[in-house]
Every structure is written in C-alpha cells, then in structure tokens.
Image (cartoon, rainbow, N blue to C red; front, side, top):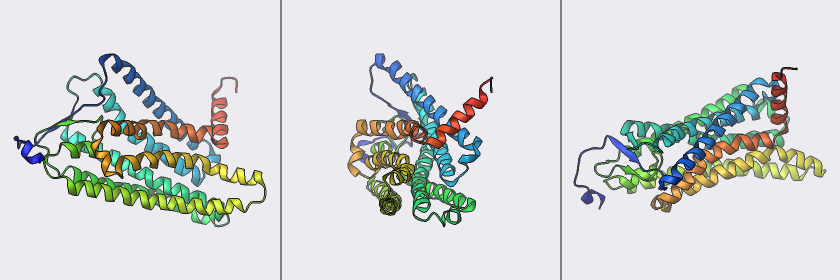
Length: 315
C-alpha cells in the first residue's frame, strides 16, 4: 500500500520534474530540438492568426474555427514548453504545488477545448457540403461564436473536474514526477492514498469526451462521404473532399495520441512511453497543424503570398 510506504505525513509544497533521462551530452541537442519546435509552433500559429485576420476572403466560418484552433495550439504548447525548456539546465527542476495545479488546469482546458472544437469543425464541413443552401443560416456569425464558446465551456468543465479530483489527492512522501510537466498519470503514481476512484474518473471522463466528439466527427464525415459519392464527376468529388482532408489529418493525429494517453488504464504504468506520446501531442501536433492547413490549403497559401508581396519594398 502507498500509504504504508510513506512514513512522512507532511503535505508537499513542491514537486520535482524528472523530465527526460538523457546523458549530459544529449541534453544540449535535445534542448535545441525542443526550442526549435517551440519557435516553429509560435511562428506557425501566429502567422496563421495574422493571415486569417488580414485577408477578408478568409473571414468565413471555416477559417474562424481554424483561427481558434491556432490560438489553442499556441496556448497549450506555451503552458508546457517554457517550463520544460527551463528544467533542462535547472539543478533542482522544481515546480511549486500551486504552479503545478495551474499548469495542469490550463493544459486540460486548452486540450479539452481543442477536442470539442475539432468536432465543431467537422459539423461545419458537414453543413457546407451536405446542406449548402442552409449553410449561411446554420453557420451565422452568432452561431459560430456560440459553438466556439460552447467548446470553451465544455473544456473548462472537463478541466475543473480533472484538476479538482487530481489535486484532492494527498502527496505526502515522494515528490518526484516522472514527467516533463504536471500530468494526471504521473501525479496519480506518486500519491500516497488510494487512487482507484481518480483513475476511474479519468478513464470515464476521457472516454465520454472522446466518444461524444468522435461520434459527431464520424457521423458528419459519414454524411459528407455519402454526399460526395453522389457527385457525378471525379474532379467535383476530389475538389469537394479536398476541403476536408486537412481536418481529417489533424483529427487523426490529435485523437490517436489522446486516446492512447488517457483512455487506456494501462498507460498509467508506462512513464517513458507516456512521455514520448506527451511530446507528440504537446509539441509536435501544435507544430504540424498550421503546416497541414497552410500547405494543403490553396486559399491560405494565396493569402500568405498576397501579404508577403504587399510587404515587399517594390510593391
């Protein structure tokens, strides 16, 4: 029993982030790699925000949602990356209890909101392709704002529940988190009380979010596929479905890693595997999303070219 193993009943005021188990020689290259990834995230997502804001042709529901996606990617990677980079060369690698709780709350808020937003984006594509004549009514400015606000509210509720349950645990002996940020599996592992209820709550909450949002996505794309297959020309089918391809890739990357991380009780027992997966969804996905949407989207590429040409001294 964890309670028997801990002789010290003093409540912890700080944690130690163990981070990555690498040799001193590998520390600098790994730090530079993480720094490069984070700078790419910042540059890519801020560029996406600016391009959508500056080009009036992109002031449509799809790009309104994409703008919010870039904002969320920027936010949740920023919650994690700066502290992770700081601990590479820090001697003590400490994070206070309150800072840990705050970091986890905002991380869970932004990641949870992104999951709901991806479902909203699937519904947007469904409305545009399957009900084009009703699209402007369904996706009016006020409707889009309500859908995004709803995503944030759902993400906030998820974050409050997870943060409340996780930080209601007692941490009275071991304070070393085998992770590079404050995440539920690592915190559960060092608690000195029975964590069965917390693990069940984490599993059920994650499963509910994944099932509900992926259900909306799968149903939306089921109708989209049915509609696309009815288009007589191959070129027409290709052009229509191409508007969804970037979203499908982003959804696959996001839900694949989140499902692996949180919807499997067995994932709690493998810290090294969890850290690799966590790097993917905290840094790699926010870096890839703006690249996927810009490289595969002619409208975004044209808007970016237009802005760059406008800034040239000879224009």
